[in-house]
Length: 108
Image (cartoon, rainbow, N blue to C red):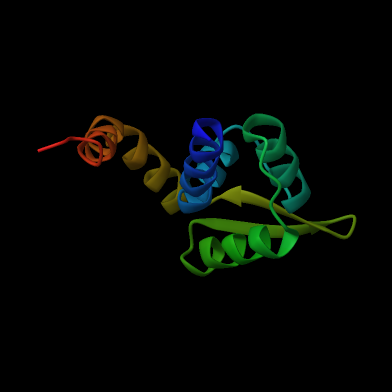
C-alpha cells in the first residue's frame, strides 16, 4: 500500500513539473519528444504519451522558452535565451521550492 501511495505521489510530481523536467534536460542537449518519453521512463519509471509531451512542448514553445526545428522529420527542441533564464531561475529557487514541498507534510 505504501509503495503504491509513494509511486502515485512520484508520478504526480513528475507530471506537475514536466515543463521544468524538460527545461532542465534541454540545458544538456537538444531533444525530441521521443527522447523525453524515454528519459522519463528510464529515470522515473513513468510512461507518458506522446500527446502529453507534445502538449507540454507546444506550451513551452508558445511561451518562447523553447524553439523547434525539423530534422529528418522530427521536431528537435532547444532552449531559447528566455528558456535558459527560466531554467536558471528554477535552479536558484530550489531551496524555496523544497521548503514549499516540505510544508505540505508539516503536522500542526
